[in-house]
Image (cartoon, rainbow, N blue to C red):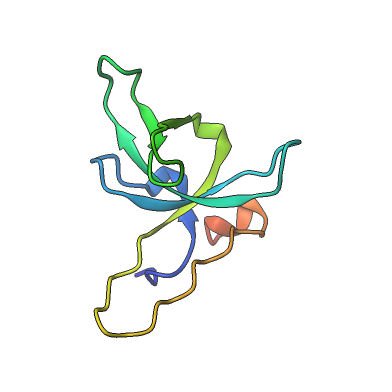
Length: 102
């Protein structure tokens, strides 16, 4: 079983509306980044796909599948304990996410 704090391949990400951490691939406008995203079904606001609304108040961002590199579950909230740092974006090779490398 995978550890909760390890990056996983996007093909295994939950598509039930659960909020997860994702690594957004680097682009010409900036380096790789981490965002909170969820899978949304098609509705009057857009087609189904990955969306983020937590990082930019008042704005819903839609991500195309190729923009997202990997995911991990949100960390558990631990009341009274020091806040854990936000993980950095996954910097490794895509092949390492599957574990096989073949």
